[in-house]
Length: 170
Image (spheres, helix red, strand yellow):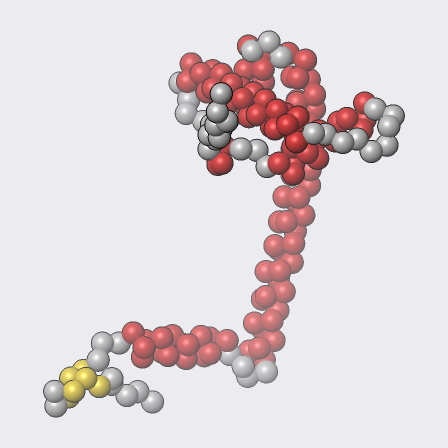
């Protein structure tokens, strides 16, 4: 038998990031093992990655079917939870729900913090504009000058004596 090069079956776009797969695998194995440093062979990481990719495809196809049965076009978290039960992985539903709830709680905190930060920034900007007006530096005037400069560049040129010249302003 001649040695043949194995053609890549999975497009690179569909591959999971190797560093993340390695990190997840090593993290999980470190919780299961008392040994300090664990090494995972390259082929094993590839097997984990490919298995995860196939699982994601299978789960997303099942969730998509559930979504279509509900006459919707957007898959939501409940579709994924139902899909997990349908493909006989009900033990994942509880931890996933807990993870989703935790994620939502963190985002609620971030959104509240972001809106407060946004309000503070807007108030700060208003204060800066008011301060600029008081010192005689009107921000509107500088903006108008910038617009005029842009117009000069964008204005069509007028032909004078067969030559193309731009109209002078100022």
